[in-house]
Length: 208
Image (tube, rainbow, N blue to C red):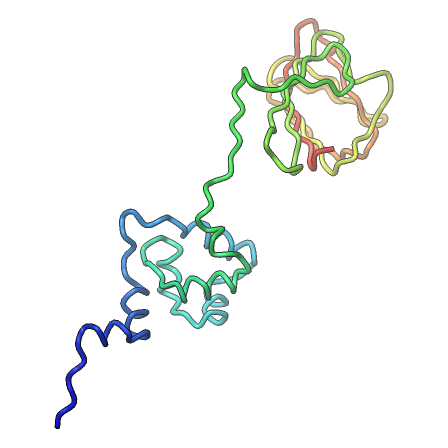
């Protein structure tokens, strides 16, 4: 007696065949776009596509198309890639993390400056950096003596006016468009020597 031919029900149980049909299939229009996140995670690990091929056993052309959202992976393939990149699959579908601060919502802060109006722009960050928008009125300054911050880097750029910046014994005069980057742990100070307000943007990392 001739065995019955496998029908659609049995074919659906063929795992290898199912994977082949899914891997390499063009992504559907409404499929979440995870390619850029996969590429960023691979590059952050310092891996080339060839290295990822060795770690996952997947085809290089497929991985390339996957990073460009041109191919849809099976669950098994996605798990392999995430394991090689040391990320959780669910992280690929997290909404983008962003913190919008409207000009009218920026919190007013005071870090000890004299005759200064400062607004905190970096709300919602987890200590990676502190960003301040400061208006330094004529004669305004950072205090009577040099100071340091418990941070690694301080960056300042002048948007309007003039800023005199003192780093130990050195003096710099920054005009609009000028920027300065320095170690936050070096004694420093600043003041507005002009007759009009000076507006500057400060970036300090990590948050002191």
